[in-house]
Length: 331
Image (tube, rainbow, N blue to C red; front, side, top):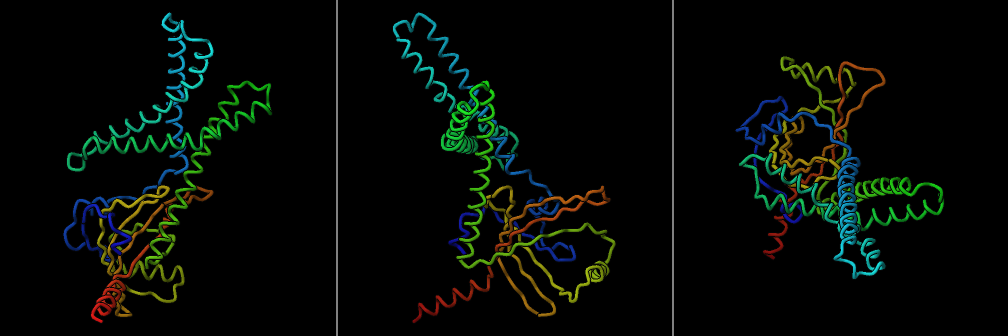
């Protein structure tokens, strides 16, 4: 457990939540934010990457054009009369791709500064922390530009100029540029999905269980009796058997990684099944991604199913492992 989940705890806040909605213990600031938070539909991870990387590429293109134009103007002055035409031509060719690399950072620095100003005094880190994240984000876009965007762009430009020689070069360049941005976005989404699968497989190999399911929550009038609501569900969906249980959850604020806009929750759960007189304790990482299903015709209610991946570890299992280790040491 410690091997797999180390370095994911930020600060501890605790609450106990019974299934009938009554709160026990003290509701902390984090708990209130969690309880009051409505279902939030995530934006498309593909378009998020497309817009951010496209923005960085657009800024880099402006820096490229401005730098090349500035160098060309400098070559027209008397200070460069000693340079040969070949040298000037070579400098103009390589100047744009070189100076444009600085354009991948301004957007990230602006985001960092806005985040720094928008954070409260209690939650705000040092400015250098935000700028370090900006450098990391800009470096990522720069690497994507060098490894993916530029090769795809040049390949499409070469194919376009040879296949459609009568087409204006600027049209081919624009099409190649946008297509290369699509390629970067698609590749990043694919890589993130592979990283998420590897993350789950690593935890599974360490003894965690994995359960995936769709969850839907319904807003019910507080004056309704829980027994009546349960009876209505049993009758409506023809449920053969109903188990009654109590769930005590302790939520822990975390810095777990996000994968393609999946939101992670970390909690300790104590589940009591009345019919079986059994208590189960587990540590759970739950990744949630909400969506909305709309029918062909407008309806009175909106339907928000949530795709959840629950990665859990039975705490009793940990105790048994520790006990076996202690017994082995005594031998």
